[in-house]
Length: 92
Image (cartoon, rainbow, N blue to C red; front, side):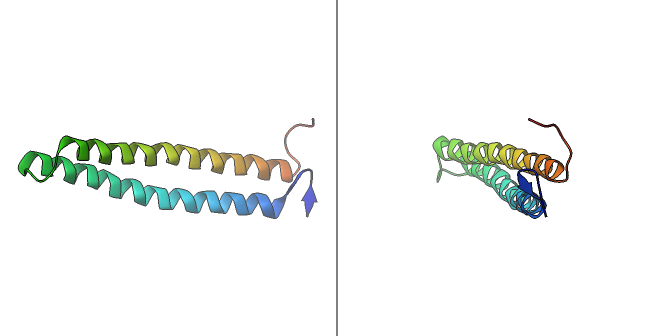
């Protein structure tokens, strides 16, 4: 069914993919948080690492968190597309 510019099925597909991406990203963030903790512990208790490793792991975590925000934006955009496909919203 096509209403307006977007197909309802396309909007639902985009929403589903955005939710899947968010779930995957949340697992990535948890793993990177552990990585930061472990790297900081290695820095404190051993001489096998340096502060650059800690900064690198923190940078990776920050990148994942920023990508998570982008994923949420994609989800919200898909909801808007679905709303418009169902006939809601405004006319241009």
